Image (cartoon, rainbow, N blue to C red):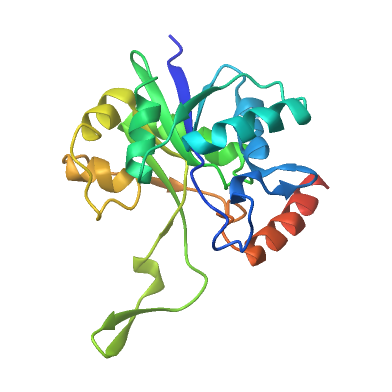
Length: 226
């Protein structure tokens, strides 16, 4: 029996770090808003995935106009985001039904690979959770007051999205109150006593938050098209 898949795409960013008046998820990559590329990655992986896009209420009309302008035909539902990412994910989860696998993905990660998406859904089906990572290429140090000390790179993982969970696990975890220590969905699940299973991500799966990130994404998108 095939388990139903959802993907909640959280796109609540502003243009502050991008130094843009336009929210970063609507900036163009290859002539199309970043958010559309992100939706397309999941739809092209599996057209049966139910996609839920969570946007701040003040961005809904802009998104509607962009969908019309770019003749964007991929089916998706739109939910109203909240004050913090936590509240936005909870709003998306309210549209999830039944026994399913739920991915939560950043709207400004348009270069996630199909292999990463596959691994995350497959591992979540087996282990209940799946959180993608890459290994750091740089040396790492930990701050201790005014001092610092090196930390072996093999003890560190850089976490990405999509983070995928069995619906029953992540929906129960999000019943709790918001805590500032929640940096992603994995930390919310861990607060509920859930063990997190790590799986391999892809290095191109960058989160686009600065002009430099967008420039790198243009280069990577060109390489991936070849």
